[in-house]
Length: 413
Image (cartoon, rainbow, N blue to C red; front, side, top):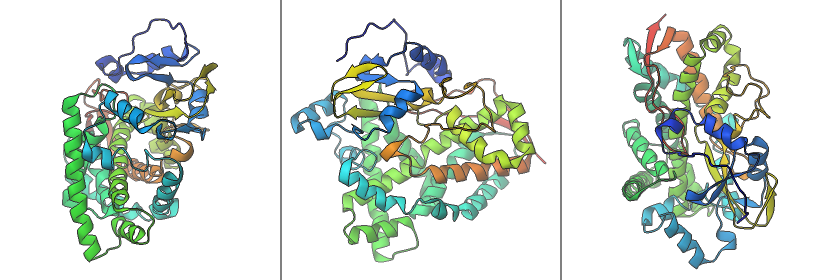
């Protein structure tokens, strides 16, 4: 491991202060002018956009390190991070499209990519609009709502669930399972988190297996039926089908809820920008991109170096684990003018909220379409929307970013 003398600085990604505002901590890390070593997870944290891009776009930097370690060492590392003795999690979560590399990743990505092209996603606009209208019809007579819990939490899972073929009444289950599984990727996880993640994965698997059985007997015009066809034609295995369906539901769920909440919060913290967006609906696409930049819903991912390399002016050996702090890079003043200001017309806006390289988020078109429809509809329906609480509480942890709840007052036109 490289030797470097770093100034002492407090880094507690599990604490309330970091949850409330992580950006001063990220700025302090950038000021080090070198990667920051986070000993708790043996990871070199990257906060500058140039460093994050260099690693994310480098094909020799992989999501897993199986290509250059033996099975014995791989099992030791899994035990070290408590990712062992989880048969369902190990089978369906630790080996999915996101976690794979090489031929397996390319093969699975090709299967999924054709379902998430802009043209395919654009066909969902009417369904999204219909569901958003129906949900707002039920809520708009209330003077005050929890925008996250009563509204945002119901939209992404319903939309991605409908695309996959999940009945509407089962969509709340998806949110619970997704949150329990995703939460276990955050540093600081404990045995109780492990048990919940494993149980959620087991229940998720059993549910999808039963749903899969119905599609095998009676195919429909949905993604699950098409995945069955891909399986039957040899493009993916049964386990890969389950893990891919699980990943699509998880990836398209929690992060979109989070950015809907943080996006609304940003609009309400910067009312001049909200007014600007209301006055000019053509800014919606850039406003949505700014919501992702300003509060990246998935602010931390990692890569392993498969060969000796130089990052941030330092030399590192093969096997080094790098933490890509997308949330920090997206506030880098060397890339963005006034990065801590929310600007609905920001252009250019080459942020990293969707990752980069071979792991660029396939669901970004759907997430952006969801938000376009939602915020356009809210602006058309409500004359005023205001915060009903001074400081909404944000989720704790390094791997997610979004408000736990967001109480707002709103008044219909």
